[in-house]
Image (cartoon, rainbow, N blue to C red; front, top):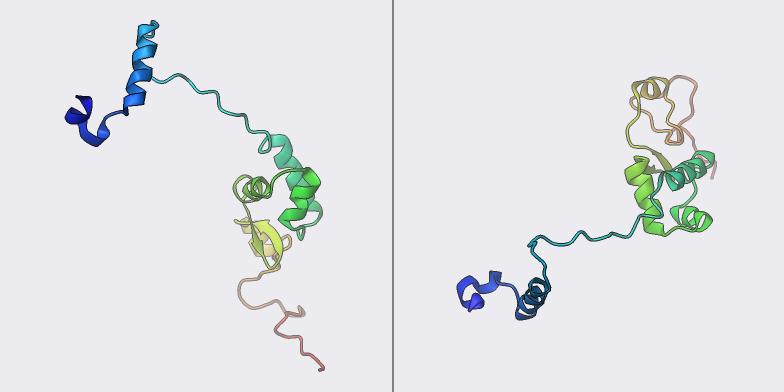
Length: 133
């Protein structure tokens, strides 16, 4: 009868029986019960600080090694790096996504070594090095 009236939007027959049982036992609310979610154990502030400390000591650490050191999953470490710390990978180094104006002005890339515009006089870039082979 309900299926005829509502079509595909109707609840299944087993769901109807479950609701009938709950209301017969005295339930009077139609809202869902609050579900207790599993607490996050690996994206806490403590783990974010540990990942940050490891990356500050060596920005070339691969995500797999960081996850092995901390005993976390690869995906959680990757999420902490990209979402919580706002870093991304450039030339095998993890650097902040957004540089401050001071960092851009002084050329401080904290591991990125990417420069905008021409290099200052006296600096050697990869394009200026010639091989003797």
